[in-house]
Length: 282
Image 1 (spheres, rainbow, N blue to C red):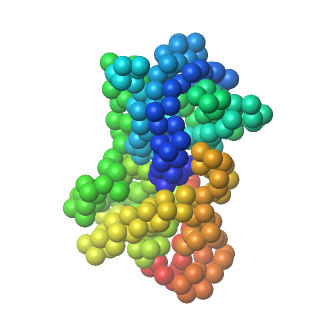
Image 2 (image 1 turned 180 degrees about the horizontal axis):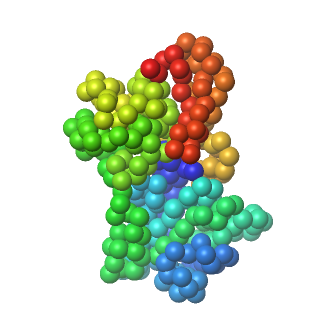
């Protein structure tokens, strides 16, 4: 599933390519991709003629602020890529990929295509008089953004102090820290020298600060690399992310640790594949 760095990469690409673009038309090829409204004709009717003012990221959600011809609020467009979603900026006459779910026709014979193999991704149109959180209810549950100034040692310590969960499981909880998934939880735990199975509340103050700084560093590095492509992720131009080539542990089971040459272990934790170095993380 695309995580914070992948979604941030897409968000930045969308702002570069589609900001101030007017949506001239739309086509829904798979109705269940729509989360709101459920009617494809209603969705298209409400977005046609609107302009994309800017894109924002919240956790793993993408949000486009829409305006009308008078630059007034025309609602929001919300997208969650889920496991295999892609947003591609293409020429309109480009042959359709097999798994195109929604098309948004823009100026200059270009379009945005939402491609989703597994069909778990969702798209919302939020009416002007509604807040995104009212329609996209998952936004209400999101915790703090890890790249924001609010992601402090005090915040993390407060959340950790009563948790009996393994720290890896703790980091995957979107209600605590928004945007971290399987890849970057493993990477941050390696950088902070903490074993994924360590109980969250048992971390020392020094470990908490190492973990906080590692999360920020790993996420920023991944954004700089354009995210990670292990299967479906592409940016809006269809380009793979490059973080996978420099990953410390994720996806490197049985390969030598980049620091100590010990074989990277791969185990299941909470139903998720988890990678760590038995020597570096104790």
